[in-house]
Length: 235
Image (cartoon, rainbow, N blue to C red):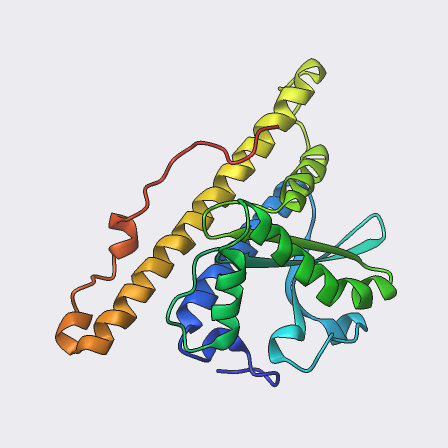
């Protein structure tokens, strides 16, 4: 099924990767917003916000998350980049991105992906009075600086229960940030594991039907990545 703009989550050879990556991260950020007492809307078309899309690409017609706080509307878009040496991708833009990112120091690829999204959506969104939030990560679990700033802002909005005294407010906010960072880290690792499985499955399929069945559906749950509780961010 495709919407009038040709929804890319159900089209193309990478639809499984795109759907899992996008939907899981989108849902998690909405969960974090809800914990911060912010009601959010998912997959909002820019035209519904009276915002002109940056181009005619079907992928550019909508924004991941939209919310309003104290009369200020905000839009959020999330992106993942892959800072590895070039592979045998038939898509030229993928080869170029990988080649460029492979020469960067740690974290630079995510920062550049954040800037690219900001340059793409920022001017048109801000011109209509909305706040633009762009969050980016790379497949090695390195996050662009805006992610931590975003979590800190939401942590300050997180309601503190009466059981927690005011004297422990700072440590409470720190624990909230660590908890959210762990959730984001786990979600990104699941995407990375799915990416490995997807590449292996496609390679096996190219070698014949017998090899394609060698990878069970529970490949992700068995490996190669294991859950951990170490936070990516330190408050």
